Length: 353
Image (cartoon, rainbow, N blue to C red; front, side, top):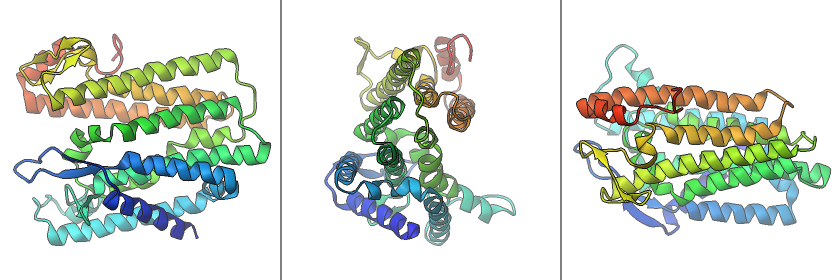
């Protein structure tokens, strides 16, 4: 049953991505290849999903509680789906996509893990951009399901759960509102689409990132005023850094003459932005997103150490990515990157890292 539900869920989102209206935009060309074209209708899918959830909460709360009450079955089904999809992409890519062969005796395994095709498309839908939709909308459903289970079993939502839902809803709605910002990220422009990205989208994000909400179902201790205020402060600060830095970078990529904090964008070497957040730190968007996750994890208090594995994992991931991006940018920009690092001296944490 869980497998059928998962396939229907992904299938409906795929059909919506194919047929719902949305802004058509051009992405970043990969080398000498064609410029990919994307239909940005993720926000429409998000709004429709929220509408369905509200209707289910009102008319059939037991149906909305299904994801949490059958989480193990859905987790197994999602893993099977991810491994199968990665296999299909591997076969399709090796037969139809001319790519530079990977060196070494483990080339086939590496192709399966890292992917063969850069921008695989089915029915005109880019699979890499599409996969963010079942990933994050699936996370939304698990979060709503956790709230529904608490409401059905206890008759109300705790302040902890209510605040968690508000934080996460704002975070997810913001992603879909600015979905176009994903088109210039490393994952979309440079990573091949294999098991690593597929499993991350269909398993890791919805089932791991939603751990705080699952734990909060059984947390009924009162929320201290100081803790609620601290969580709100961390969320607002983190969201400001995360959204602000990403928005500045996106606007600069769209128009190098854009104004940032009321002034014309300033660059190093005419290529690297040093205005706004990007003149303070090289990865403050990572810092902001980490603070956002810390803000809603703290709502769990000391009930369980499990939710704290999420921001801990993200800290390791972001530090690794910061080092990776530094190496790539140093190789790409050379001396200009060194000049940029002199202006933006910090990676993620001013005066610390």
